[in-house]
Image 1 (spheres, rainbow, N blue to C red):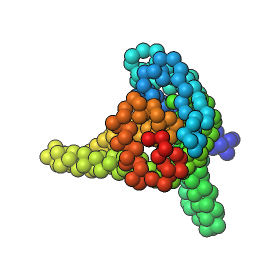
Image 2: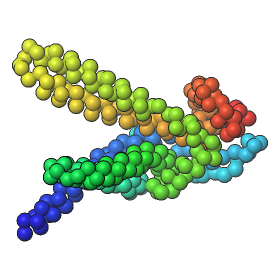
Image 3: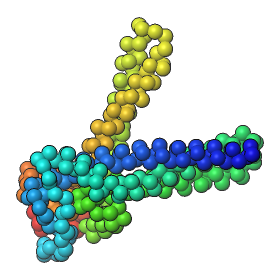
Length: 292
């Protein structure tokens, strides 16, 4: 019965960890889809959301439209963010939960593998077991990172078109392959820059709080650590919105550059000029030099 209790405790513990990871990822997905839907509304303009609009899926060598796709998202009110949030909590909520569940399961496996490694080390098992667990842990982390990266792009497509998670993943992958933008999205450093900015701000806040706490009590390290964690979480909420906006702009630029050029010509040309300076070959292969 003691062994049975241990198994029950392990199952309950893993379910709790899974629910915790899943809930956090779902919240992140809701924020991402809401922000992406709002930015997509800005890109395509009111006309694309008053009813339905066709968004270009590709161009041939002469600049003619190859295929088109309807924008399914509609604007039910003047509050764009509220409409995007309603869509994230409504039709797109299943896609968000499904994509988040995959990452949550992989994160739970990481916790299980780490717990197993600690148990093997405590029992004094040989190095072969630890080496195998290290390899498995590396593979699971790699797959989890890839799925986390893939989810960000898929959720962006979900926010724009309202497709299912699997359809969105296939569509965004096919879009960048067709456009030849694989190197562009590989060189996207926005997430890294935002993460470094978040860490830097958190450390500054922690140091400032530690200096203030010197004249209050002796628990300086505890207060500073709490301040760093709190500021990191607050900054992460802001940077998540910025990251989603950047990804949405990239997808919208690749999907339908004409909409951005017509609705926001000044911002579009600034973006196009900057990308042309860094990714001139990719833009030329995609045919943008013949369109603008």
